[in-house]
Length: 150
Image (cartoon, rainbow, N blue to C red; front, top):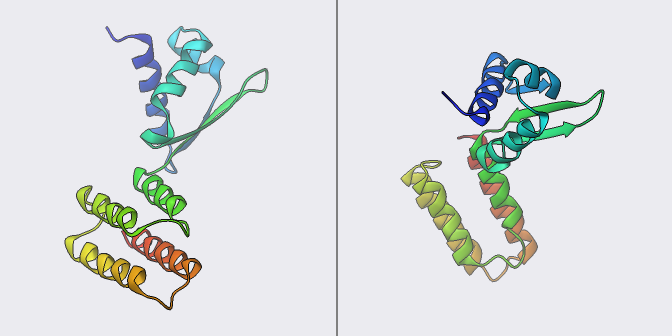
């Protein structure tokens, strides 16, 4: 027999699967009644199994009109957003190079795309006429384009 945390997770995942848009709004009391568990167990499952690192955004409000809103976010979107956040005027060549390698290793881009991206990255960091602000803009634009077409 599964433990309570597994049952809660399975219940939430079933609710998410029933929705086309990857969003669900639930009430703790409904889940607790369905599974016969305490609301604190639901909170535990939300905080450990429905995390941003696992591709979920959770908004929760307790109380009488309380709810749990869970949105399934594709992991690749999280990766690209994290990379975008890390690109600043102080970001060095090695960091951007490792980002491209990460995308390639995790099959988020092809070998050909990685080669093209590395050519752009190399040119951007070697260019003496480009300001750091322009470099940031170009690198972020490149990532946005790759994300959009992947």
